[in-house]
Amino acid sequence: MGSEEDRGLTVLADPTRARILRLIRDSDDGRALVGELAETLALRQPTVSHHMKALLADGVVARQPDGRRVWYSIAPAHADRVDALLGDAGAGAAPDLERIAADLAERYAGVFSRETVQEMVRESSELLSRESSAPLLASRTSAFASARLDAIRRAEGERPERPEVLFVCVQNAGRSQLAAGILRQLAGERVVVRTAGSAPAGDVRASIVRALDEIGVSLGGEFPKPLTDEVVRAADVVVTMGCGDACPVYPGRRYLDWPIEDPVDKPPATVRAIRDDIEQRVRLLLQELL
Image 1 (cartoon, helix red, strand yellow):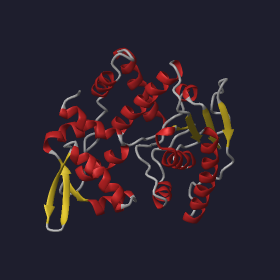
Image 2 (cartoon, rainbow, N blue to C red):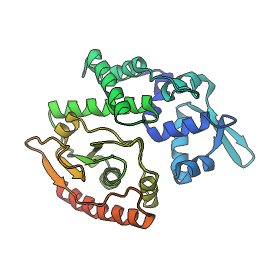
Image 3 (spheres, rainbow, N blue to C red):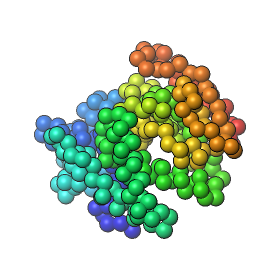
Image 4 (cartoon, rainbow, N blue to C red):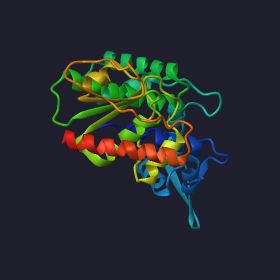
């Protein structure tokens, strides 16, 4: 079991929580209200409240009642480590890759060597920073490296009973995120869901976050990430949407190509129509999987 400090910072593997912490830290007085955060992030207040409860439970934030309002600030005991993972409030610090690798090496002890984990963290950081001007590079590096290690373990070991689906589009900021969010909502723990992009954007588009939130689906810890070999090898079904021949082909996998309109720069009504089209396809796929 890790220390209280280690457990507290694992919440930063969720980019939504990392965004919340950045907004709090970089505010004028170092504190924020849930309503303000929800408006800035284009999320519902209950969604933000859920994340705040997790951050509060792990001691990363402090709660300060003010009449009917409740302010949240970064807990002083975690301020330095939050800065290390988010980057300095000023020019921005490089990710603490040694710290990230040490934490993941502890998590995967007995499964992967420390050297393997260190190399995965280094490569994941390079991929994320090369493909786009990705924000929250440290926390995303941790989450991306962890997902890739999990994929390797699945691809090279005994495949579990749960099927795994990989959704791939160009920027991994629209169609693939819609499909993944809806499938996670419908399948729960029955299906493993991953996403990737052939040319990933810096962040999931706000219109996509809103379209999912409208139907009660949380984006969770998802963010655009590059397509890598191990996630394709780990998948049972690979669903591509507009990314051409970017996805490598391996025997034993099922490949589907969904001709779906790109929601980039489309009005809300069009995004909703795309979302609903994807939902119908996802429901049919889930019936086939289960």
